[in-house]
Image 1 (cartoon, rainbow, N blue to C red):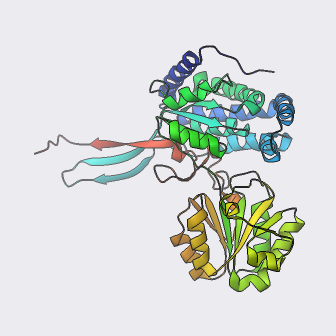
Image 2: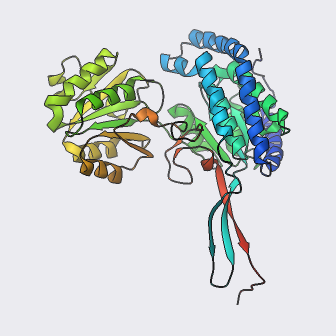
Image 3: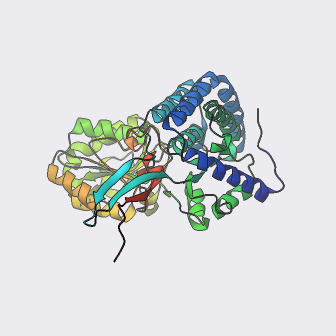
Length: 426
């Protein structure tokens, strides 16, 4: 199995990757849609056929992770099994079948002087993706960038180095089978931290966008040090508000799924807000359901009085992305109180409202400024695949260029094409 290389001259290595990526991006920008489709379908086949190789590599990484004392959430993100590998391949196939965005006319109009103007989608160019733990990001990011006509440089975490290398090898086989350059999808072949620093500098102008996907410290460093644009979110501090108008059975089902389906993902609910007017009817049944599912409860004083098994929440709990089977719970004064709490503590990732009152839903959607808002649905739907994007390279919580799941369309820019008949400007 491939091991991470130890490279003495990291700057030279990374500069070479940047040049290869830029050269590949120029070919991808004009590649036929069918060539990109064929590359992704072939890569998916290689991943399926090579599942045993990927699992063998993953066992090495998991053993190393156990020895290093990684958290349960990190190990869950790192772990692959046949089902997850099949889902990875299916995701690439779904991306392959998406409409090719490159060359799409986004808008067209004619000026009074007869000029015809079109706004047309174009690739971003070269995308650098820096990620931790999740080896499936290797496949997701590679496939999405390729579909959008971009070259990508992938820098996975040291904890997933063997798994990512195995997946990457199959992606390259797929790319080459379709006659596209191997430099279209590159994996940084060293765990040296200097490689990240070189990527953040932009590799001599060869990197157009950086996408970090990992813990808060990684994303904060990228946002602080990057000399190129960044698509990122610091954390997924997601809230669910249960209104007095909520159907109790629905609320119980949604909140348990939002918290417990997978606790280690950024779309997992971390705080439950309950309308004080629904405390007598809704609070204890919901907390019983969470507790029965193995979730620890940390509540404000009112919650603890009604549910003695809860621990008293501290101020830091309202600001914590647990990524674990823990949830903070607060009673609030209706939708007004929920909006106020979310405005104070949210990371602007994903929030959900459980309510039947359309006025409450309207206020929630209009007044809360997060990238994804859901009504009567689990926060765990905060995922590009669930949005029909085929997959995602991450969830962006900023307001420039991309927001929410970053899929194929979000990995494009645009240019203007202006058609004239000899017009000159007076």
